Length: 159
Length: 397
Image (cartoon, rainbow over the protein chains, first blue to last red):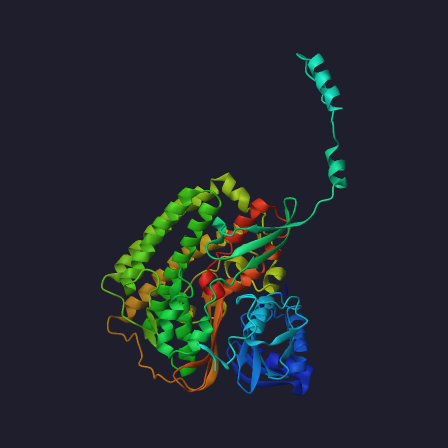
């Protein structure tokens, strides 16, 4: 692993510059806080952004892959942490996914920790992660043919 | 052939028979065709501590693949939360993890406080530090008791459970309940520390700092126990980070990372404590990290109690908060006894969350069981999986 550094307030700007330089208008930054960087990424660039974060900026840990149903479209939110070069820093990436073509490239080949999170997001929201080694139901019964966390599925059943 | 051998033995009865190998075992084994086989450790194996099973693929005695099966306790926690007003989610958050319930409720309250843009009073923050550490001690002692029975040392179970009762009593003193406490509130805590709480908790801490050495001695002097933990389930720091393993298991491989210090929340930056890190990366390192953490928790409790006392009796401990949360996206992270837990909240301006996602550390840790068990023997599997400290309430949500 790369050498550990202590927190410095220039880190957020530094990460932003490096990502903008590499990906240009594919990535839009929506906010910054202490140890937090928020960004919106185009769907076709998400895998490359994640690979760049892991390989070049040493963000070794994918904490979370979250599905969100925004009714008109769906979203996938990634939280990616670093243990070494940017110790304690967390980058939040948001990707929009259209309802009629819910496909995103899987990042579980980069981080093993994303594997089950992606499976869970698929089974609950129906977002397909292309290239995932095993997209099968994990928490819900295998016989389910619907996605229970979508907004169209109400707490007591279909609308 | 056999008959000949027998007759020869009867002839030479009374003398020592000549030791000649009848079969060349190694050559015969190499010729044999063996099939790999899936074995289910369960359905209710003592190491599973709840409703889940582990399927392992074995080649003779050696584990070549492992697949945990979870989901029996999935109750749609996140969906349920979308249909409830914010304050009514607090008791539900207690039920996420029954061994350390206050950490999840604290995390939930922190997330909503962030969304509301409020900062709870200092006194509430220090009380919550004490509560978090009491829960960490409870959770680690519960784990130690479970590991004791898993690895065949029943006295450890009894002694760890006895020590845990004292911390349970502290929970009762603070909020009236033993396990699901319903104590933190959005904007502070439900009640101030009761009278003489500071005396009791310091007594409890001082007692525990001595008593824990009895338990450690019991384990470290038992060679059966230690040899089952040493050099099993070894992971490298790179593997551990990549697989998303967090908490004591991560620190047991030499990654020096603790959210309490490296991404401080709730006034943890005002408190002086060490983060125990060991480099071996085996089950024994995970055990030692947890034991060290318990001693550090005592140190934190003493400091936080001094801060609460210094703030005085009349310091505020709770803020009034509006019931509607302004639209936005917020997340908070917290160092759970088991790893990094996290909540992500999308609010839409109403009194109910639009989406509330829980990141459970165990859900990700247990997904790495293939890498943990690979290459070990069947008898090592309980020792390795016990170090995950399984809690199904948060895994399945």
